[in-house]
Image 1 (cartoon, rainbow, N blue to C red):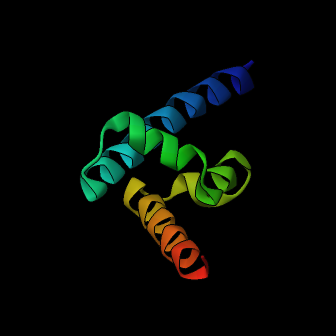
Image 2 (image 1 turned 90 degrees about the vertical axis):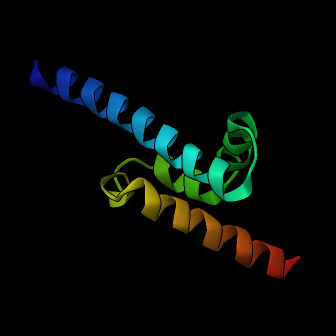
Image 3 (image 1 turned 180 degrees about the vertical axis):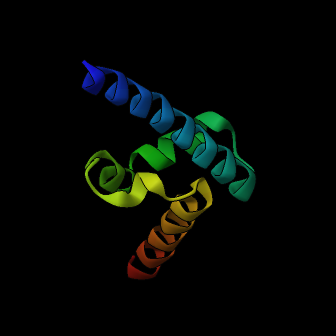
Length: 79
């Protein structure tokens, strides 16, 4: 069925997308890829991404990274 193919393709796309986001975070914060992954996987931005039906996946890695920076900034203000 074509659905299986498209969902597999979208999984590959998502992994690529996350990898691109993590590379951006890595450069932005000057941290290792692993640290970037740990930070990102704990974020609300990542949770939002997991709710696949929203259009966030369609956005660029840069857009998703920006969402993450905004989240971190608003959290650090709140602390």
